[in-house]
Length: 69
Image (tube, rainbow, N blue to C red; front, side, top):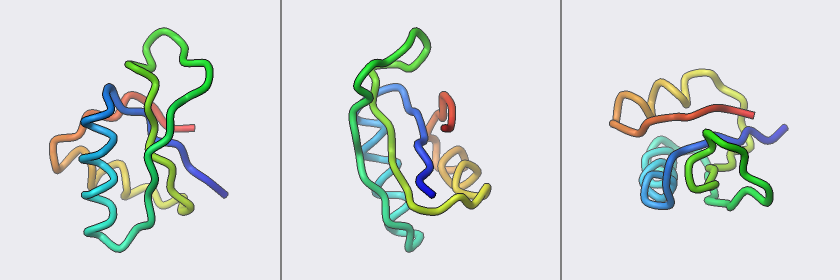
């Protein structure tokens, strides 16, 4: 199951990917095809894990998470 973590910009997506990779999580930056209002510029970080602590790791490292799908 894939988890999509919404962030506000491409820069935050790249930072989030780096943070997760340092924590041994495979992460990829992708663009949303149809971003909705509130999705920022439409970038997400895709991970193949559904661990709840991923969000905490990102927020602890200064990445603002807009939502998770």
